[in-house]
Length: 365
Image 1 (cartoon, rainbow, N blue to C red):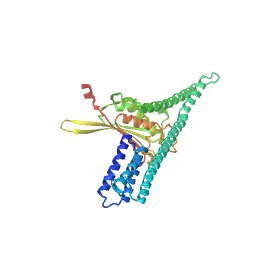
Image 2: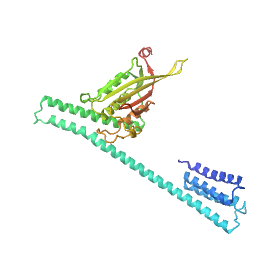
Image 3: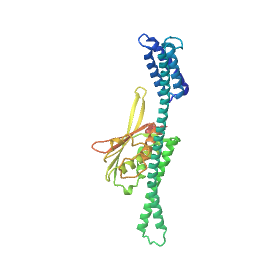
Image 4: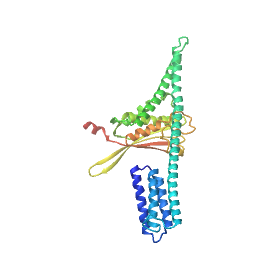
């Protein structure tokens, strides 16, 4: 907890006044030595909350109030006995030591936190660097190798092999484009410059557009699309929703075995707010589920973190896809969460509150 310096000084004065007042109320039940422990407890609490200067003020004021109100002769700053003089001096020294040690401990904790933050940043940088070195280098190498083969006049390339090389260039370009798009999207999210371009969209078109971005020729997964009849139009950012679905599909394909089934389900939830005035609110519900091995329990709360990848996963990736999904969903004021389903598999569920319209109503507008 970080308090403003003015607040810390106010807290220091207030604590001494409050404790002194309470001790005066119960002075018939407390001897002056017990009061010293109570005031030292106040100094310790202030030392945990405030900087060194307010703590020193608390220690000094506590010593003076203890002397003035509780040490004989009372209501003077003189001390009657030699023992009480020593006690007052020890009280003041202990209060000062408490203040200095607490301040040093807080400085040490701050240094430890800074080191931990630095190590976390270095770890994230290394993770990103290692991921990008593989995810960008591989398609670039493929493109360069295939291009050199096509340009080499000494090689006699058959039309079928030429088609294979062109196909390799195309696939590598798609992979490279996906990684660059992820980096650009995460930069847009972190910079706070992301602005929604709302327009009326039909979810069926968005789904097929997201699927068409996949490398369909080499896919062994089955994609099952479940759409209800009479689904309304939604006022959303077309590009972001398409990217959300695309990233979820890529994630499902990457983390499930061959010939797995991926189900895309769309539902519209209508909540009636006022039945008399026909006032209601709509939610777009999107789920992308599979019948793979499911997600480890430890990953359910961290899977949307930036650069996070499940351990011992066979696929590569930069760990940005799902964090982009989360960012784009939250930009629409929605939420996304992951959970495991029975008998096996994982599901990513999205809820986005949005404006809806049916075709006949839209034409009237």
